[in-house]
Image (cartoon, rainbow, N blue to C red):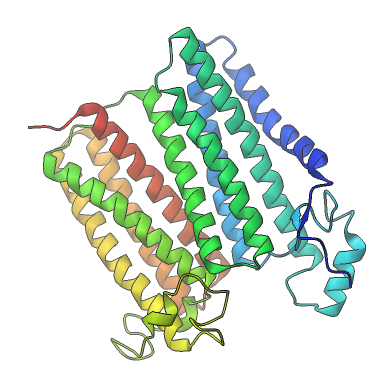
Amino acid sequence: MATPTLYNFSPVLWLALVGLLLGGGPLLWNWWRHRHDPPAVRLRALTWLTLFLTFDLVVFGAFTRLTDSGLGCPDWPGCYGAASPLGAHADIQAAQTAMPTGPVTHGKAWVEMVHRYLATGVGVLIIALAIGSWRAHRRGDAALSPWWATVTLVWVCLQGAFGALTVTMKLYPAIVTLHLLGGMGLLVLLAVQGEAYERKPLALSRALHGGVWALALLTVVQIALGGWVSTNYAVLACRDFPTCQGEWWPAMDFEHGFTIARELGAGKSGGYLPFAALTAIHVTHRVGAFIVLTLMLLVSWGLRQAGGPAHRRFAVALLALAAWQFLSGLSNVVLGWPLVAALAHTTGAAVLITVISVVVVRARQAGLAS
């Protein structure tokens, strides 16, 4: 079985063509649907369309990780130097024959390459968004600085680089976690740009405004912790709830668990990662979940007390998301980390960070209430 070259750019043109086809379809649909609308309306619609497809990409990325398909094609950007698993059939078959349940199988290769195709398509949409934003700026009808779209373009390029490192560094935990955070960051950037066209200010008191910002920051930290749990396979370190291993505070090794610069499954100084380190990772995420859920309830109550229709809608959304995240997280523990529950948990995190971003932008539009 031949060892593939980690970086083989021979299929780049074919991959670019796939990206143009996948991104071109939504672009044409958006243009046709809004062909009689002003350019600003078309740009707003393209922003929300890109956000929706980026959300789908984030969820499919979680599916790729959770099905252990991240190394389905062990090189980048193609698959054994081919643009699809069809061209790599012989190499994949050899790897699968050698290790039938290993990281490289035909199914996993397709999951990995579909993820790359979708990422390329989203990249095409973000390029179009950047071009459209600068054109709107030159016409003088831009609702937001075109540098936001430019930063989004740079961000997605960096996200692609982290995707490459995820493969070539063999699922290095810190890289995989940063890749997850990068996907969430794209959702935030696109939500900010989409809301700039909406102009629906949401007046908040100074205290509630601070609570929303605190929730935003803690949510990012909690998503990072969740990524760290997932990439270190620490979900099943605790199989009971609310205790862990039958104890409220089991034996934990924080030093090894939160050593960032280490390979998958390795401890701080090499060797195997101790089970107590996995326990520390899991329990830390639980504590973070308790803090974030409490703050979600408090912010939801504050929004409800504010009294406006929009405030009430966001209050209900936060309550629903709190319940969703609690139940999906609990299901991961007591049901043994089923794929549906794990995907639901990541999906809820993506929706939560997007909703919070919308609230922050609308609150900023309104300014601080006295």
